[in-house]
Image (cartoon, rainbow, N blue to C red; front, top):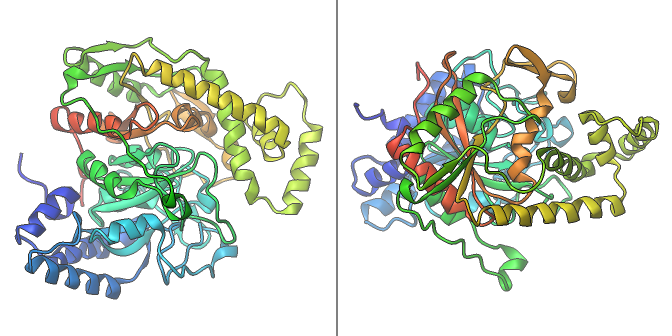
Length: 485
C-alpha cells in the first residue's frame, strides 16, 4: 500500500520526519492550511483561526529543530482544539450566543501541555450548543458536516475536532467527553479518540465563565489519526494541576500486554437499552471472529454483575444532574413545576432528565453511592477481563436533524425510528463509572460510513485500552481517509 499523503500521516510519524529534517514545521503547517483552504468552506469544521500566530510558532519550531533541540515530542506538529477550550485571545462560546464575548485570557491546561511540547495550534473547531448534542451546530458558527457524507452529522460535541483530523486539516486535537463527546465523533468520522479515566487530565480552562470546578463525569482527552498518537498525547495531558499538584502525583500504570495473545476480551455487540444497527453489529462480529484465534480468551456473554438498565438509569441521573447547573433560575423553576406534574411511573428519558435537573441533594447522594458500588463491580469484572469491546453508538453517522429538542429526535436503527437519546447508554456504560475507553476505526458499513469499536478498560487502565487499539491498528486496520481529501 502506498504511503499516505503527508497531511494524513500520524502525528508521531510527522514528528519523526521533523526531527529527521525531512520536512519543516512551516511546511507541515502549510499542508494543513492548504487542506483548510480547500475544504473548510464545505465542512465548517474549523471556525476560529490565528494563522499569523501559528506561522510564528512554526518558525520557532524550525529554529529549534535545526539546532537539534526540540522542546517536546510534538515540536512542529500542527494542531487544532475544540472551541470550548480556552486559547488566549479567542472566544470560548460553547456555541451559546450569550457567551459570544467570552474571550480567553489564558490557555487551557490541555492546550498548554501540548504547545509546551511544541505543537503548533492554528485554530479551534466547532461544537453544538453547550456541547449537548451528537451533532455540531450552533447559532454562532453554523453546521459542521461529515466528510464521509455531507448530509450527515460528524458527531458531537467534539465534532469539528474529528472532521479536522479526518480531512488532514490538523494532526492533533483535544476534546472533551461527558456523554461520548470524544468517542462518538471519532466513531462517526473514522478517527481515534480516547476518553480518559475521570480526573486524570485537568479540565482547567474548559469551564464556562464563573466556574472553577470541573463537572461530574466530564473529562478532557485526545483525538488523533493513530492509537500511538493517543498514547503519546496522554503522557503529556495526564497529571495533576494547580493546587492538587502540590500534594498529588499521577502514575498511570503502563499496559502490561505486548501482543493480542495476552488479552482477555469480553464482547458486547448490542443491548436492549440501545439496540445497535446491524451494519455496526456485523463489523463488531467480524472483529470478534478475527480476535477469536488471536487473544488469550474471549467471551460474548461476560458482563459486570449489574443490569444494563440500572447502569443507564444511574448514569442519566448523574449526567443530567451534572449539566443542571447550566439552568437559569427561571428554567429551574419551570423544570421543578414540570416534574411536579409527572406521573411517578413515567420512566421515559425526558422524565428521567427533568427529575435529574431538579434532583434534591439527598437523592443525588443515593445515586452517587450506587454509582460507586457499580464502579467496584466493574473493577471486579476486570479481574477476569482486560478489555470489553462494544459499540460507541447505535449506528453510523445519521442525517442532519436540527428540528426540535434532542430528546424529541429519532434515528433509524434496523428499520425502526428510535429516540436518539437511547444510545447515551453506550456513552454511560463506561463513562458514568470513571472508566477509560478508546474508540478505534474498525471498517466501513455497506453505506460507506466509518464505524469505530469502543474499548473499555478498568479505572486507570488508560494505556491498556490504548494498547489494544494500537495492536488492532497494526494487525487489523486503522485510519482510512475519506474519499476526495
